[in-house]
Image (cartoon, rainbow, N blue to C red; front, side, top):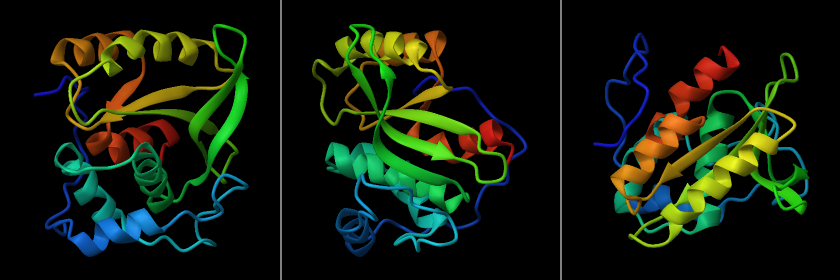
Length: 185
């Protein structure tokens, strides 16, 4: 079992839909505005309901997603909660002084609060574990709050223990609850 802060007091949806090939295809085909502008909750229709996003997120370790599809799923979770988002936006500098591009930037239209998301998807065991310390260091240089969202099942358990102990991080399956707490939704 992955390490994760346990949040209590959140209702568990009664019956979440099974991720069908059609639901996955809608995720793959959708890319509202690409990376050119804000996608606004309530104005830009989402291809998936929050329940469908939760179902996909719960099974993400068994899916074959690209990095862009994983980022879209993260964005759609926030959109389903009423958050605006933008993808691939330069925000600050890396620890090496290069432009820092965040994968997803959420915005709460009620008060303008923002949250930068670093997406880490690893389907099979590999070198992604070795990149986590760099992601944590870069998160500390952001000029706004940030979180690392991981999934895919390819991370070593020890790496995830370290990640969750040393920074703000969450499994994609728990992202809806994490965003609800962070933005006080």
